[in-house]
Amino acid sequence: MKRSLRRKLAANVRVIAPERAMSILRVASVLAIVALGMMMWSLVDPMPAPVLLALSFGQLLGTISFMAFLVIIGWDRYRQWRARKQRENMARRASQPDDEDAAEDEDDEEAADEQA
Amino acid sequence: MHHTSPLTVIAALLAIISVVLLVRFLVMRPALDRNTKISLLLGLGVFPIAAAATTNVEGYQATQKRQFCGSCHVMTPIAQDSEDAKSAGLAARHARNAFTGANNCYVCHADYGMFGTVLTKMGGMRHVWLYYTEFRSMPMEEAKEKIHLVKPYPNANCMQCHSTENPGWLAEPEHRASLEATRSGTVSCASPGCHGFAHPNMVPEKDRGHTPAQLLPRPRIDAGAAQSLGLVDGGTP
Figure 1 (spheres, each protein chain N blue to C red):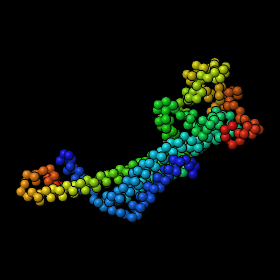
Figure 2: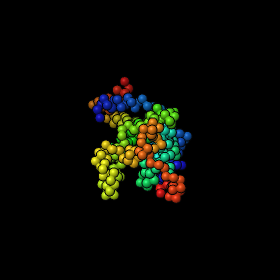
Figure 3: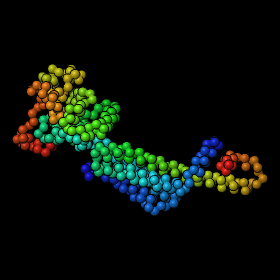
Figure 4: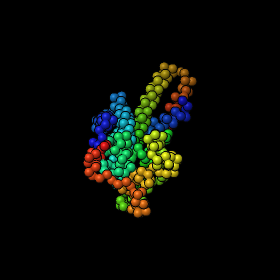
């Protein structure tokens, strides 16, 4: 992965705080419940307004909620991957204290960028 | 419920399971661990997508029903005429046919061909748009004058079922005489001189006045004859 892309990803990951991620998931859940309600309405009363609402607005809300879930899960996975990577780097540095060249690898630069 | 097909039951069950999972997440507020992720994947992804797919199929089928088309007040008289067992209108006669039956609006007005379904649905959306923007509060008498087909009704739609090739059809002298005109669409099957108006109760008074008596819609079957034929409930004879 290119360094600039990794930097961008890291910056975006920091934007979503864990509490905020849970809030987004809660909003997504509410949107999905509303969308499912529209679908149920169209099944119970298959007339133009409910059917068209379910097939358009309901689909849109459902898609948004699922996309929000995917984004949050992707974010969470990336956050876990980064934490693991940092732990590995720290462990490697601890085991090779004199190897200064190793400190110049991409991951350390990225960490420095993030701190900056 | 108006319509309880197996798909409706499946869609309802999937939706209920999703809602239960989502409400549980909202109420219990669990941490974002593996179990929560799986639960949300089912509640926000798998079950709602399956419910949406089945609802789409059900919704698509619902849009083909006469009940759906007739729910807008400007279309109600047309739907009522179709359901009238005594009506001799072209639409009503087709409504008694098991093939068209409750879907007679869609079967007759659908465009055919590769993109026919899509074009028909786009046309239907246009109808909905026009209804909510122009005709929603329009009195019926005014609507009768203003509502008209965008293009002449194509004989090709009739010919999806009535091929114009069968010997019985060709044995009719009037069919033979107008064969080319019928196939090319220059003479409409649903014209007053041929099979009559499809929706006789929607013909504006001014058009009735200018139409020779012999070309007006065919008369309704009298009540006694309808009773003897068992046509009192709008069902198939």
